[in-house]
Amino acid sequence: MMTAARQDHKRLLKERLGELQPYPSDHFSGTGILICAGGPSFFTNAFVLVHLLRVTHGCKLPIEVWHFGRGEMSARMKLLLRDLGVDTVDAEAVLTALPARIQNGWQLKAYALMWCRFEHVLMLDADQVPLTDPAGLFEWDEYRQTGAVLWPDCGDILETNPIWSACELKPRTCPAIESGQLLIHKARHWRGLQIALHLNEHSAYYYQLLYGDKDTFLIGLLLTDSAYALVPHRPFTDAPFCLFQRNMAGEVLFQHRTGAKWRYANPQIKLPKAELEAECLAALTTLRAQWNGLIFTPPRRSLRAREAEAGLAAARFFHLRRPGDEPARLELLPECEIGAGRAAATMNWHCEETGSVIELVISDAFCPAWRLRQESNAWIGRPAKADGEVYLTEESASSAPTNENVRSLTEEILSAAGFPNPIWISRRTEISAALGLVAALEPGIGDALAAISLRCGPVEKQALDAMARELRREPRNDDLSADRANWPMPGRYTVAADLDN
Image (tube, rainbow, N blue to C red):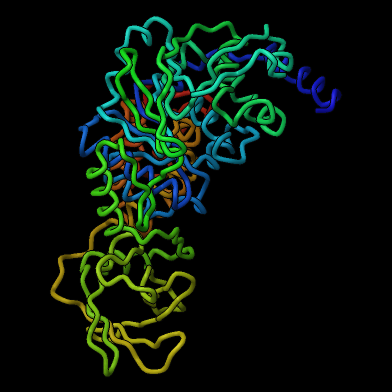
């Protein structure tokens, strides 16, 4: 490696060590689990992990799943995680407020660990299989004493590794770190986390000395003279498929399926020592029934189109008929997913407003397959690549349309501002303005905010409930101005103490 590059990164690291910021205590609270998982493969594994935590182990800890934008996480995928009590965080939205040089999933782990909303964090890779509820890890004596627990990898960082010289640390041979699981108290280790993020921001250099992100957390703690506990037992392996990580007593705690990730489609890689396999396969079956494995993002739609989607999703079951063919039963699920009846030509659906007409668009894996318009009690249209008409009729009378589309739109607006990361509160004036415009056409926005607030912490709940109350009433212009004049100005870490004014 070039000497000039080494010296340049030494200088940058020294500068970063001299610019460490104090812990923003008003930004984080509570205990939770962090998972970084964008894209179909990692989402599949994250769903299995979360399903295992919630359904099998009964884990009650709040969970955040971080991803990079709409290209990695569709509204349907977010809804499936939300139904399991999980908040999704769009890293692209957070990066607009808290910039960093983050471009891939390895780098994202260090960034998300810093900026997830929890103070006490268990970070898990998406391809993990915990054997018990991991909430008890926060009660370990080693964690309470040091505020950081690391797990060893199979190999070592050797004394001859140039990382020690690059960071001006005393050379040593020590266990490498395996970051498929990491336990940390951010208030005690904020300095070390800042350095770990710096190393990941300059991954083109440091990843040549280390294997990805995993040892950057150790180096960050060493460079800031931070205490940590290392699990005293190396993992044993089912090479090259799985690392079996242990607790302080040497008992298996996590199965990290590094080379045997869960696949949306069968066959799965069989591990002779695997536990909870039946539970994980059951989670995959649940996932396949609710998601087709594609990241489907429909075009921007009008409120009328979304209202039509809500009505169709409420009706849920339909018959798709083509002259001369047997009718096909289709299940139109919320957020544009087709459940029962899914096939190559019927993967997703959505509505569009064309002029004054609402069209129902049914898509294959790549493009629209049918466009249908409502006439009397049926939707009628033509296939995009064939002749003849198709008819979609409701299977049975349905209940009144739900407000799921309104809640989804509200979630999208909040997500664009960084929700549920606490940075969104600093943008509440922008959010209120955006939701206020939508509420002029759809009064259910206030109720949607109130429903979302039920799964939030006290500060976030207070902010959302205040906006919900504002949207449910029709204030005079001078009244509204007076209320907003009392709101604190947005600040990077400021959280309003009282939003009831």
